[in-house]
Amino acid sequence: MSKALEQNLQLIIEKGQILALDGILHGIEKEGLRADSQGAISQTGHPVSLGSALTHSHITTDYSEALLEFITPAFAKSADALHFLQQLHCYTYQHLGDEELWNASMPCQIDNEDAIQIARFGSSNVGQLKYIYRVGLEHRYGKMMQTIAGIHYNFSLPESLWPVLRDLQGSQKSLQAFRSAGYFKLIRNFRRSSWLLLYLFGASPALSSSFMRGREHDLEQWDENTLYRPYATSLRMSDLGYSNKAQSALNICFNHLETYIESLTQAINTTYPQYEKIGVKTDQGYKQLNSNVLQIENEYYSDIRPKRVALSGEKPVHALRERGVEYIEVRNTDINPLLPVGIDQQQADFLDAFLVTCLLSDPSDIDSHECDVINSNNNLVVNRGREPGLMLTKNNQPISVPEWGALILSDIHKTAAVLDQVSGDNRYSDAVSAQQAKLDNPHLTPSAQILDSMKTAGLGYEAFALQQSRKHRQTITGEGLDAGQQQYLDELGISSRDEQQQIEMSDTLDFDTYLANYLAQ
Image 1 (cartoon, rainbow, N blue to C red):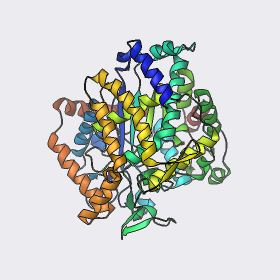
Image 2 (spheres, one colour; image 1 turned 60 degrees about the horizontal axis):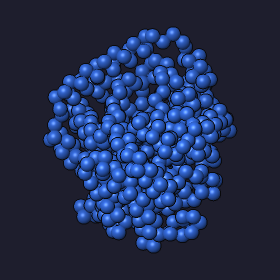
Image 3 (cartoon, helix red, strand yellow; image 1 turned 135 degrees about the vertical axis):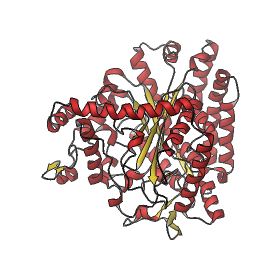
Image 4 (cartoon, helix red, strand yellow; image 1 turned 120 degrees about the vertical axis):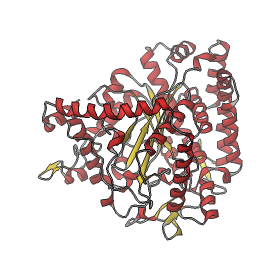
């Protein structure tokens, strides 16, 4: 990545455009299971007092009634996004009673899939669509996979940066086309180097044995209730977590917006024989939205997504086609059970420097061979990332994790130095230096520290994660909720319930017609 990166950074500095990097926007989405006081998945519905899961802009549910999702606004300072996330935790604790918010990616104790209640969103057409989509996920992949939780880091460059980069690079593209091309270059380079994020921040080396009940695996036994891999970094991102045979055959192209939309649209409109056997609508009701490889775009799991805020009722792929990429969503971030909200300021600063480096680096496309190598490298790191002597593949040559990681960090250090000039401190460089220490000593990685903590405390995964969840609840509630935030979220809870009722009352189409119109976009 070095040559292109150095040239772009030099141009930005020489042209006096460093401040064009000021104003990066950050948003955070975090999922988290509600668990009962004994550490088993909650059997209660989404707390009504929190508001409507359909319309609340900050507190909703993901796959199940028990899987909360927190969504912050986009902030110019990642510290503000982190504080807002902390405030959402603090507010939610007021409404959980004796339940806990499971502060880890791999789920708590789940006796069987019947204990996982699919999230409900009311009787409106859009609410039914959300529910039936989740029913489809159950029939396709089973419920257990949908209990995994993670953090999504939303990132956008300042709008003022794009015309500067376009002029510096002498591009003749429209600003919208240039912006989208820039974000896809960022995505390509992210995919080339994302193994490093899995090594540095992976925080799921162990899991509850209940998660694997009835499934074949080669995990090692920690204790009666815990399975693990000794050198794993992120079992959440392994084939034990998000994986399925139908999607493994997809060739979603991340090189350009046009090819991405084309390949994703093909998957949304291509039937899959195994899903046809399930049926779509039976005497018992809908079993899925359709029998295609993907019901909708969101079903495709990837570690990074190009995003554009869609209009009401608009499909994401249509929004991207019409108005281009607005921001990117980094999806490979585990919830770190050692941290109160699962992510901290240093990690956010490093992600910023990492992503800007990806934007300004190698513009080349990824061919099918390189794509296979990327997948292989990621698979090695999530399962064996801290294993002494582990070799990855770079430019068709073997290379060790510390050696390649140091090369990437060297590039990111150059970006961090420029970002430090924007922020007026050294926090970006400090964040990069802290990651070098993890390459030098794998015992400093979150995945190693989690296993060390479990061993020291004599605990299995479930007991450790429950202990950490209770500890962080005390920390967060002790810090308190801002008075203004309390009032804001109280009012939002009420208005969101009113908004859901209005949506339900205003529907004029029967669901069959609504669904046909939605899928026909």
